[in-house]
Image (cartoon, rainbow over all chains, first blue to last red; front, side, top):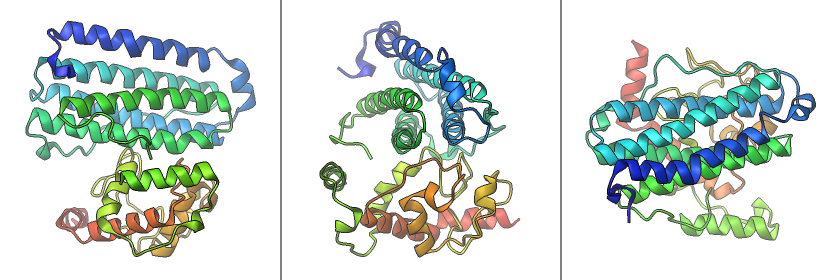
Length: 189
Length: 137
C-alpha cells in the first residue's frame, strides 16, 4: 500500500504522526533541550558544534519553505498535500530544536532567507513536486550523514542521527508515492 | 551507483584506505549521482545554504557576491580548480578550518573525480550559461 492509497487523509496523517513525529520530538527534546551539561561542555558561539547545527538549521528552514511552496502550489491533491504538511511539521520541529540548541550553546541561530530560488518553472504536476521534495530529502540525509561524525559532543551526534532517520523515512515515503522503489540500496552516502 | 556505495561501505568496514581505490578518469554521469549528496545545501544556479556552483572553476573561494561566507572561507585565498576541489572535498574542515560546510567529506578519490567531472560538465551547460549571464546584469 502506498501512502497515496490510504482511504482517508486523516488516517494517513494519524499513522505518520503517531509512528514518527511525536516520538522523534520527545526523544530529541530529551537529548538536547534538557541537557544543560551539554551546553557547558560546548559553550561558545564559534564552536564547531554550533557551526554544524547552524548549517543544518539553514537546510531545515529551506525545507520548510519548500514544503510551503508545494502546499500552496495547488498541484497536490489531498493525500499528497497531507503528506507534505506532515513532513513540513517534522522539519519545523527539527528547526525549532536546532535553534534552541544553538542558543543554549551560546550561538546565534541561522534565520530563514527572505526568498529561496526554488525551480518553480519545473514544478508542473504533483509528481514534479513530490520528486523535488524527494531530492531535497535525499540531500538532507547525505548532509546529516556527513555532519554526524564531526560533532564534538556524542549526544549531539546522536540527536542529529535521529533527525537523519526521520529524513530518510521522508525520502522513502516520497519515493514510494512517486512509484519508485522506496529503499533503493542497503547503504546511504 | 549502488555498487559504488557498497564498495565504499565495505572498504570503510574493512579499514581500507582511500588510496586503495584505483583511480580512473572522472565520469560526469556517475558524478551526477554523487552530486545528489550536495543537494541539501547547493544547487548549480542559485545560492542556497551553500553558494552556487555555476562559475566555480577559476573562482576565488568566498567570492560569490551577496553570499554570506564564513570568515575562514573568505580568507582562505583558495582558487577552485581540479586540485583544490579534490583536496577540499576529501575533508573540508581540514583544508578550511572554520568552514560552514560541515560535511565530513568524500573519502573515495574516484567519487571525487566523478563529482569534479560532473561540476565541470554542468558549468558548460545552458543552465550555468544563462545564470551567469543573468548575474552579469
